[in-house]
Length: 305
Length: 263
Image (cartoon, rainbow over all chains, first blue to last red; front, side, top):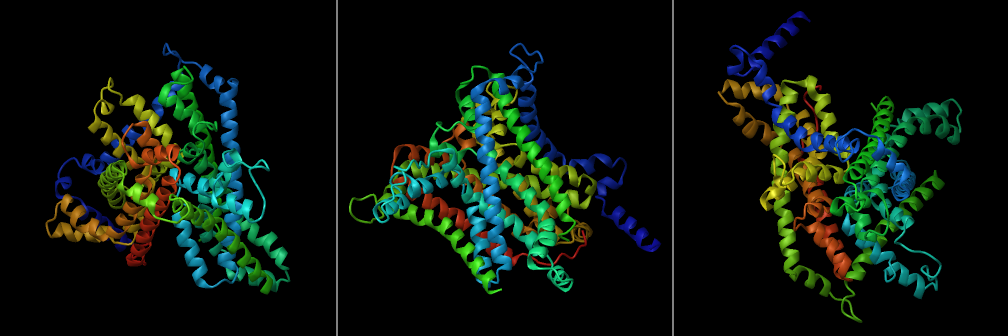
């Protein structure tokens, strides 16, 4: 034990760069990470802080809570937050449930091996297939002239647009977001399902548990934290997304990122500091979501060793 | 068990339908440009459009610079954290996760306000400066993926022994990082690079708000003004994403599997 620690200490000393062994050695130590920290400070932390501080100031530079209050008092802003949260919530929840079902199907359903590997590959692609092209794909599918719309109309006699369906609504957007939310769920949750040990199922069966009891008392409690954590991650993922929505509906759908986009382009709120507050509100929502995510993540890791 | 398998197949089939129908529909739509027949006319028009070539070329160049900047930033940092400053690891990991917390649109909003032409660092004063800021912004967005890829790669090699061996042979720090560490984590770096490429190539928000002639804003413009070309572009974009992800998968096969260090 002693010998080991002595030799570790010795290697540590030898590993030091020649110039650092002479004299003062602290600066060289920190120089190695200095570029990274300077970069992060200049291009990540300070720009964000600039907006956050601006959100609490008025035109004269005095500190105020007016802008934050305005986020709630201004009806159009309040609505846009509400629509954004609604879209993110439903696309995350539905995406997570469907993704979980598919992950369970490919891991536990007794399907051939190629099903799992090809689903994982496709999920990797689809979870990264977002932005403008995704909007195009759905317009070509369920738009007024889309293939599915036309087939439903001409072959099945169902005119979905006459029935009040419109892809350019929040529910349409949710349907589109699911295209990257479901695969993302599959990619993240599959390792957690793999972590369910066979022995647990056998132990439960030995103790006389039914399949339902095994699911209710073993599988669901073990998967619950990872599931909730991923739901929150999906929520944050769609909350900040803008490109798909913008290409999809232009500026007609009033979600927060599109409002902020218009504000950056041309101060549509006629108050720069209200724009900062809008950005600050987004950070608060995604920040809270991520705090919960990390919290659930640490709880779920206990089982996934 | 039999019924379980049935439900598994059914779930899988419904999922596949949801994922493949839009792709098929988009492809079918992209072939409809000529009346009454299927043709690749839309692809011909898109690929022959000089604006397509310019913006795509621009985005490829931006992606390459983003990857270079990302590698220069992440490899030495991750290496140094492993070798010398493991106590800083949580801080660095937290920072690399921040781009997932702060939406891209907020980050670029901050850039526009901080680096305007009247600021001490007027990136936005010139076109070149704005290009640089765009690369920097993309490198920031790619930071979580790049850092994780490189850090995973470093975990599979014995950083300390390699460094000592190189030092005994008289190598300096630049040599160690460029000729010892980088080749050893090359596969991890390449995975990060291709993911970065997939993210950058069609990115819309930053490029549009910084007014750069990139592929993402071009896509958006086409979507607003044309009917069949956007479908062809969506198929092209999907193929690019698919290509990047396939390369990452192939690379993963070459990556060393076992970690020979406990941490």
